[in-house]
Length: 151
Image (tube, rainbow, N blue to C red; front, side, top):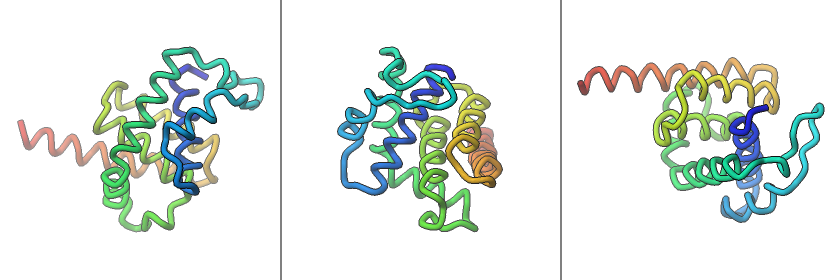
């Protein structure tokens, strides 16, 4: 698991907890970043190097600051699925990926989509990877169309 993959998994866990509490991201992040995650021998969060911690903090804060906007976008690109009917895991994977695709833009599109699908495989249900991939495909397609029209 790469440092950024590990950081995204940490952000996902923090956002998931935030869905069920009124705690701000920084509080949840501080509580989680030093916990050990044992998963098939993969590195634990206490092995997250400073650049991974920095990336996770920045990404989680960006999602928290744009939460309403990200939810509106997720609802727009998954109109058959009301946001409150999307599982908390899938909803938060979409928040992370849409934020990276449209706002932070510090990773290639293919990487963001692949990372989101991998998170869905690891933490979501059986249909989560396909759902996440489809919604992100719609986001990318619409965004590319807007960019071409604006040019």
